[in-house]
Every structure is written in C-alpha cells, then in structure tokens.
Image (cartoon, rainbow, N blue to C red):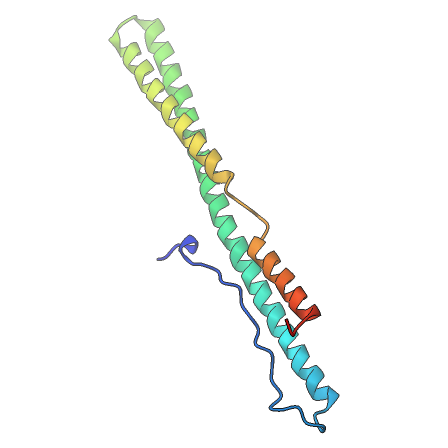
Length: 148
C-alpha cells in the first residue's frame, strides 16, 4: 500500500471548451455555457486538490501525534521503573534497585528521543493547502487575462 506522501499532487489545468470556429451565428448562450462548464470543472478540480492536500497534512499530524503518544507511554514507564527502583532501593540496598534505576534511565532516553522526533515532525505540518492557494491565484490571474 503506497503512502500518501509518495503521491505528488499536480495542479490541474482546465482546457477551455473550444467553439469549432467563431461564426457570426454562435450564440452568447453557447459561449456562456462553455465558460460555465469550464468554471465548474475548475472548481471541482480545486476542491479535489484541497482535499488531497488536507489528507496528506492530516497523515503527517497523525504520525507526529503517535510520537507524542509514544513519548507519553515512555514517560509512564520512567515513572514505573523509578518507583520500582525506589521501592527496591529502600527495601534493601542491593543490586536489584540499581538495575531498576538503569532500566528507568533507558526509558528516559527513549522518551526524550520520541518526544524530539514527534516535535520535529509536528513542525513540518502545514494545514493550509498551499498548492491549491497558488493554483487558485494562477487561475484568477488567467481569468482576468486569458490571452496571456
């Protein structure tokens, strides 16, 4: 199963309907119909592009949230093993308590690593569909000056 991040979203271009040739008998209604169809197609393509971009960003946010969840679980494990180390260390001062303390230190390192990775991934999330905004600007510019 391919991930969404491996798919590139390319902006869609609407090819305007062409009236075979401009004739004096081409009605304004036919021209307006062609323009309306083009605008509807463009709108639908922009909505699909926005949906795809939002879906990709939500996937990245979900992965970052998973890293935060992993950091939370690792933090829980730190408390568990620190508590176990304190109990064993106070009950009898033997090597068992030090072993539990070492395990707790390992979990602390895991929690720190997961937190940092989740934090760095969360910084890459952009909820605004930037490519869609750019293509909408291009389309608006084209609509103002279609011959350029």
